[in-house]
Image (cartoon, rainbow, N blue to C red; front, side, top):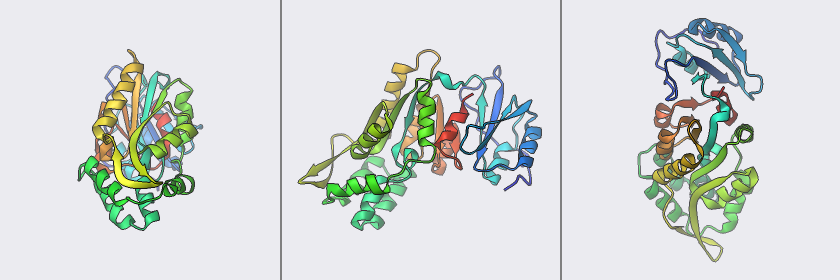
Length: 302
């Protein structure tokens, strides 16, 4: 959809790492972007020039040295474009750690919901998941309730979910390769289960993982979690421990998530990205990617 009307004034979140002395670029990304919209955005922002980002899986442009951005966010949202203000000092080689949520972020599914579907109880479990992700109910309590409903599920059901239903989000491997190329450590922090994070760690060569341990007896789930539940607070703490060890004086710690239990981690990050996220998460994160894949995160760095 082309930009037919430019909204008169629309707020765009200013990056935490921006300051008046550092020029800003505008990054616009989408599966397809109309050429006339590129020209309109260049004029609207009074950009010095426009750079096509040819390596991106989606169509992407960087508008250099923009001088104003009123109306840009509303216009891009109306046309289905992702947009972000990016300080030119935010270089990809400064990234020291990238932390990701698992369900609906690194992967396309909610594993607990898929397990419930295999057991024929999805109608009981999925609404609890949605409510927790919107922040309406306590995550730890929601997890206990959902896991209790899975009591008696055979371990073979978890194996089926991993092999038959789990898929990486588009662009996930390209994003990981891009950050790994500059020496960044990767951290998968999940309110889900180690059965899946352990396998993803091996498959994707992730540096660290944190998730919940399902109790299993006689080849079946007991309906309980072993030990303390990995919730929003523990996810943020794990992220900060990793960031404090690796960030140094000039490094950046990046966090990516989609649900309410990711907010403490996102708020602790130097660069936070809401990926296909719930509205409350999108509103608080530094950047939002709603239309592109995870590889679009790479373009938020110069």
